[in-house]
Image (cartoon, rainbow, N blue to C red):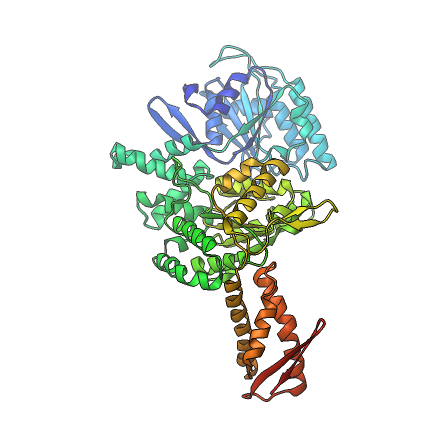
Length: 610
């Protein structure tokens, strides 16, 4: 078999070139994928073992002994000679392909027999070693002894003279296949010059585009159409292996999807769900209705509501990141809510979840003040292997894997440790994140919302803080102060301008609650209180006009804390004394009660019912 090495992937050409100098290879990373192999004018998708067999065949090797931790040894003939006879010459008559997996001492004997042959037979061993050791950092005694023998084997093996293929002397290599680099002890490949460590990278866009052309059956599409279909499929398959692209086409065939719907099949494959809320016909109507409903839910924030709706419209049309030359797997929408406290940032996030997904349970909140230490990020993505809680996974990655269509709120993002913010770079750029267990979680259908109070306070000389803007400050000044503080925080304090760049123009600055908006919020919250008494206790409570006026003035006097401050004032000035009075009088169901007076004595409020 004579193949053209120029048509091989780079790692295969590297192995081919270094067979005279290296006795063992550690291939780690994308070890279970298929690879593009060009031969003449033809390109094929070839599984990794088959590709390695072709590489060895061009150099005159006779057989490839493949070892699997489950199925045991398998003999693959790759040359023209009698592979069975050659294997027996090296391994002895007792060798039986297809038998049970040998123990480590027996496996070591087989590897030594191939790598240090008594006869000039060129052969190689392919060892799937991802589950060979219980723990690479804490191996058992037998495992440690085995790795020491392998280290010595690499140092003492000798090249085998050529009988065919290449004319020089080549090693009979042991090729280790790993899913991750750390599945073998670090010292093994780091300290032994005869062991070559080679990363198997995931496919890039060019690989995916060439694979898409193969899978689309070029004979069924004219070239302009084929190019467009392949480009779209390759872009939406970002993060998938080539083998996963093969499985995606099978999924599409099973679901009766056309070639133009392969991007939908890629989404199904990634997310594991068939329904796509972003494609529902009524979503456009719901967002248009949101132009009327959101201002009544988030009172006094017309600029924030308008910009949020613009981003939702962009997300619903699939135009997020559309300015890029290629389709993106970035989140559907990214919002950065900034401004005073208690003005509706969290309420707007909940309203977005209800508006888009029709369910507030699609809203997921993380209080980033709980992630102020560097290692607290493990809560989001899961602890790494070997640490307590590794099996449980991360709170964020588990939730998105279970339900990809979510609004995810990261509250008070400025309080998170800088290393934790780095985890958002991959999400914002590629729409995916690798969890502690090595699995990939996709955020391409989620809306990410960050909130912050940056710019509202600065440190004073006494070590405290003072406000930079106050209620009544014109909105354009509030916006300018907040944006400047955000830029300073990310660029100077954190040293992460790239994170700010990925947020782009999606920063939404909220204004202070105006006196008019404060009155509306007061009436809304008061109505909620009276409605709760009516619905749960069948008691109709009303307020005398002068009581209502005085209560409104008291609750809206200080707007620094926004709507949350109004609610706290209502609780102190009305709910607490009303609860005391209702407990004391115990009005029967169906009765009507009038609050005819309120008295304030210091921090204590009392009222009189009629």
